[in-house]
Image (tube, rainbow, N blue to C red):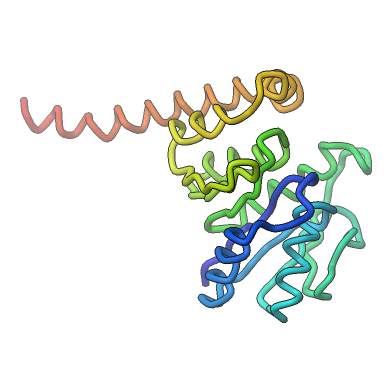
Length: 196
């Protein structure tokens, strides 16, 4: 069964109609949905799924009790050894979700480093994500570093600088780019051997 990680920025409290349509596609296909327990987009996603009475949902949380579990779904508790409430504490849950998912649907405010990190974590695991840039009301398929860099063009410069400090954004993109280049070189190598 396909598992979709649906997440988004804490500043987003209302799901755009286009996002609702996309989630309805997931519901109609009866995919498993994993979602976080934060306020903002997570809570809005949960509310929408609860309104559809959708049952194939698991709420990931760090600690014993989720902050939000609107549909009273199954809970997946993630252990974190970082101090409770810290960014690293909640990041453990996001990493577990990226690991468990086959793909992602991310609703991004073009600023949030948490949502951006999820896109990066999925991409680093060779998993596809669809990012909805809320202010543009448009979807962007992230299947390559090039697509990720195009997505980052929507991020205001001050927020980009903050992301470099908070999550080492430029470094992470650089690592992904060099890995992608190495893989493409390896893919080309057998062809070169065949021609000689």
